[in-house]
Structures are given as structure tokens and as C-alpha cells.
Image (tube, rainbow, N blue to C red; front, side, top):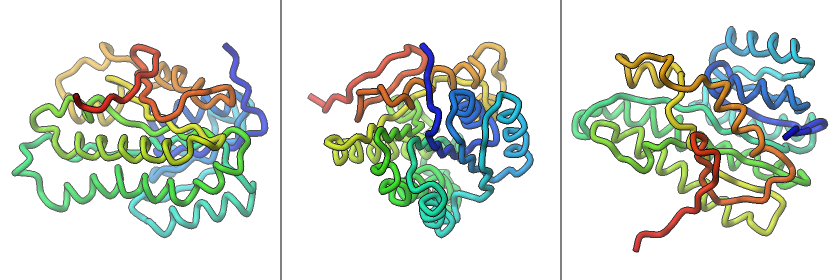
Length: 246
């Protein structure tokens, strides 16, 4: 299926590497102008070169997501230049540590919550008016199976991703009568730097490359998408409904 995103504006966080990098590249290849955000300037510049190589265009916005004022300003700057936003890919996140809950340092816990949860909420608040100006706004919030498995020693990351999914579900319910579609994404095990940090003994060749995940994510940005308030499982290539506990 060919996805046509010509004339659409897409914002991708964590775009300097991994899933964010390749999702930004896929969006640009489909015709969207990509606003690429990340801390690493070199990675953003490499992305810009790759996007130009496929005939796309990008605007690079280097900043740290812990800078809440920068997130607030981002929405205003997008409005001044384009007047709308069509696609949000809230991808950036940090792992923290693999540790017993009671052993996690306060500064580590707070950093994970700041980047994974508070910054995502602040980003939603900053760009929601712009997404509602689109005729087919699409918000894709990256989550993780950790939000549901709650494995031992993954407490801080699992907690942050469960909170992010709750934000996405609530936002989807609030906007379901609009043209905005909001969905969470569980990419599954992916060959990223975060995965290597969490699983240092794993052979990277045994898990999918982030380009494969990005290709599966692209259709979720399509104006034809109908689903909202759901969780997309990349490994199974399907949406699932959230079900309340019995």
C-alpha cells in the first residue's frame, strides 16, 4: 500500500537514531515535511542528509526534552511557520536503569518520568491545537510491552510507559469526535541503543532493525486511518483494544 503524505507536516521526537530516525525517513519518503527533534545534532544532520537523498525535506530542531519551555515554544513556532501539524510521532524516551524498585535513585526515577511522561504530556499540550487544525491529524505515541509485562527490575521504565499509554487513551477519548486519531505503538524488541543497554548479552541480529518497525508504523500516519484510542502491535501488525479488568 502506498502512503501519500505530500503537503503534510510531521513532528518526530528522538529522531537522531533508532525508531525515530527511520520513522522520520519513512515519513519524508512518503512526502511529508519532517520536523526532526533530538538532542544529538550530528544524528539530526545525518538524518537530514538521508532525507534529502530520498527527495524529502526536513527542519532540524535540536533540544533536550527536559527543556519544557522549548517544548512550549515548539508549538508556537510550528504555528507561525505552517499554521498546523498533521502528524506527531512522540518517540523519544529513556530507559533509566534495570534495578529493583527500592534501589532506584530518585534522580534516575525523576529523569525517566520527566522525559518519558512529563515531556510527552507537555508536547501534547503544545501541539494539540495544531493537530486539530489538520483535516486528518495523527498522533502516534511510542509505548512498550514493558507497560503490560511489568517484569522484575524494569519498574521505572514500565511505570513510565504505562503512564504514557494512559495519557494517549485519555487524549483519544477526549478527541474522538474530531478528525484527530490518537494511538499507542508497541514496537516490540528492536535493534536500538536502548535495547542494547537493557540486554547487553543479546545478539542484535536476532531482533528486527528499526527500519522494519518504521515501515510498519508509516500506515498509522495515513489520512485514511480510522482507529483511535488503540494499541498497535508492530510484531503482529494489528491494533488491539484496551480492555478494563474484569
